[in-house]
Each structure stands twice: as structure tokens, then as C-alpha cells.
Image 1 (spheres, rainbow, N blue to C red):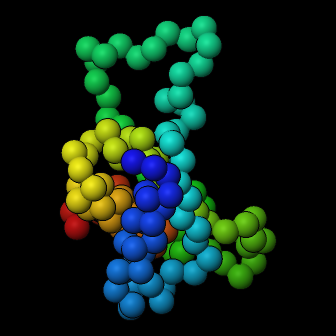
Image 2 (cartoon, helix red, strand yellow):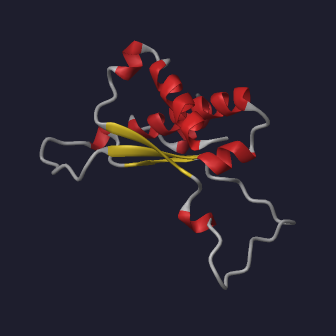
Image 3 (cartoon, rainbow, N blue to C red):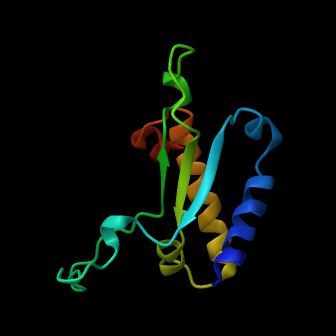
Length: 124
């Protein structure tokens, strides 16, 4: 999928979030990258063993959870969520699944923004 179309879907997903939820999100950017740096092939580094599949990282929240912010913290730029396009595409068969996975990933990473742990997010 072209990056432009992927970004359009991300924007549509964000616009479709419930208003009561969107109002609580403050200063969070959503970025799209191909894949995490540690997954990118590097010259002289052997490629991953295909017989040992690993779970792909689809997104990550980078920042300070809202529950840990303080007026005494100096802002270091906006918190942000990174979506990894190639990894999301790798686990999806078509645009409908990509849209669903983007929504799931954004919701998961926003959970971290709101201070939820992985265990709490699994229970949701």
C-alpha cells in the first residue's frame, strides 16, 4: 500500500474515535514509519531466521503517560505514537484488515498514553 493511502486510513481512524475519548488526548502526534530500526536489515548482519518467527511490533507509544505527567515536567516535545506500516501490512490480507489493525494498534497505544499497562490492556 502506498504511504499516502496508509496515512489517509490513519487519519480516518483517528477522526472516527469517540469525541469523549478524543477530548482527553492532548498533544499526541501519530507518526508512520516502515518498521522499527531494530528490524531493518543492516549490511553485514545476517537476516532473521525465517524458521523462528517473532511477533512483529505494530506500534509504540513514546512519551510520558498522562497519569505520570506533572506541571513541573519540562515538555520535551509532543508525546507520539509510531505505527509501523510494513509490519501492519504483513499481518493483514486487505485494506479492511489494515484499517481494523490500525484502529486496534492506535487504541492500544493510546491506552499506554492514558497510563495502562500491558496486563491492563490485555484485559480490555
